[in-house]
Length: 159
Ligand code: SF4
Image (cartoon, rainbow, N blue to C red; front, side, top):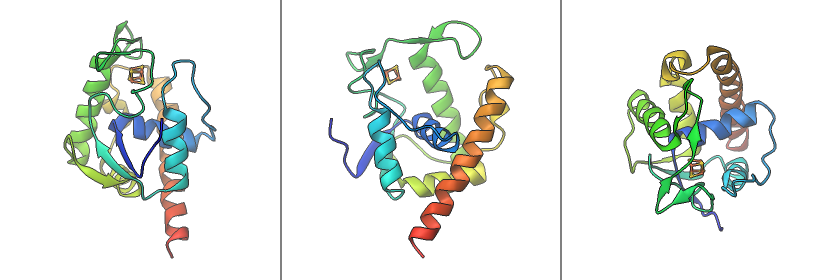
């Protein structure tokens, strides 16, 4: 798929990519076939990429083998029991929207989303309250680092 300067993306997908940057992950194609690696490349190349926020299927989901008729058919055990991934994602994305004061369909440059996250995302242990706190601690550490690096890089490039 071809990624454009406008990237339709779920808020948690964006934050997961920034967390991965903080962890030093270099994204590669995934067996699911989704486009996380392509979105990550775009975001790495251009921190001013315009995000169009959605809690539905985004551009990352489009080539994924679990996307059927516009819906995610995968499951997850992140909340401590097996649930539909689509419902879990929607719950987390709704919480992120609320904390950042954003809404479905809003458009915002990637770096500005990061700045908002730095200021308003708050405690991840309540954002991910159903999840294993040990995993959340690691998420928190890498996400904070990823946000800091992303903001610093944009500041240097746009001096
Ligand atoms: S369809 Fe589901 S499993 Fe596939 S990328 Fe989207 S959220 Fe992830």
